[in-house]
Amino acid sequence: MNEIWKSVVGYENLYEVSSFGRVRSVDRTNIGKTAFSDDSLYHFKGKILKQGNKKTSGMPYKQVVLYKNKKHKTVAVHRLVAEAFIPNPDNLPQVNHKDENPSNNNVNNLEWCTCKYNVNYGTATDRRALKTRNNAYNQKPVICVNTNIVYQNSYEAERKTGIKANNIRECCKGNYSHAGGAKWQYVNETDAAIKSVGTQEMAILDTMFEIEKGKGISSYSKNSIVVSTVEISNRLNISTYEVRKSIRKLVGLGLVEKSVIGKKYIKPSEVNEGQAVGHIPPEIGFSLTKTGFKVSQKQYEKFMDLINIGNCEVNNNDD
Picture 1 (cartoon, helix red, strand yellow):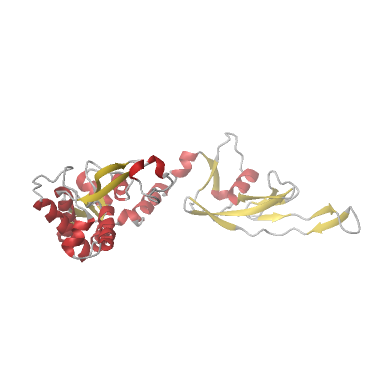
Picture 2 (cartoon, one colour):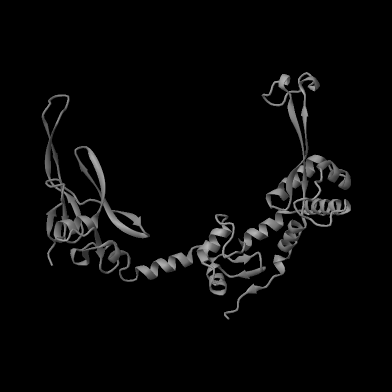
């Protein structure tokens, strides 16, 4: 079959496209302005255009850059071929590659089609499913915090629990608080959380628990007694700075909560010179807030669950 050339639609007398999927500029003469004349002639010899690749939906489609009226436009080669050689009486919106090779833009390999036909053509559905399953996040082990069971990935968790794999992943990423009524985490993220709790944080957490228990708290709920950093510092004989630094880490893990011990309003007459807070002038007074921290039994047990995750059994059974 001989190669046939036709004008590119919208770029007549400037570019041509062939039935083999090649694009070239045509010989032409332009009139331009120079230092010696306002109507100088410029002669341009046509050439085959270099084609680049553009990945659309993971497929490397060939494309070229066309110029007209000092403006450039990047266009897909397969559309240029279809517009020039293939009739489209139904005004279909997309062009399909029959052999599923996006680099083969021979006119015999192209056809006009609907969007639905194009996305479901051939092995497209299987390729999308394989790409989704091969995604790194989709293959990461997940753990159901409620049951302490580890699954090889979110798809296995869906097969075993009936909870949608996508919902489990969104929960692991922090976009959902729960999935199927349960809390989920990526196993490696849980390991990182465990490793971030050092000996000092562990000692502080145990000390806070002992202080609350020593104060006669039998039900560790929202009404737990608040523990101050000074009290922890005195117990462990470390600086309050080190205590606050460790507690910030525990607060970030959700194991410790910040709480208000008490508030006191300082009257203007009680304000010492230079005692203003921030931008508040001393003549109007201010509220002095004292804060502390607390750990509940539920939070303490949550921490111990995290510690024991390494001992839980990975669910490999197919039943």
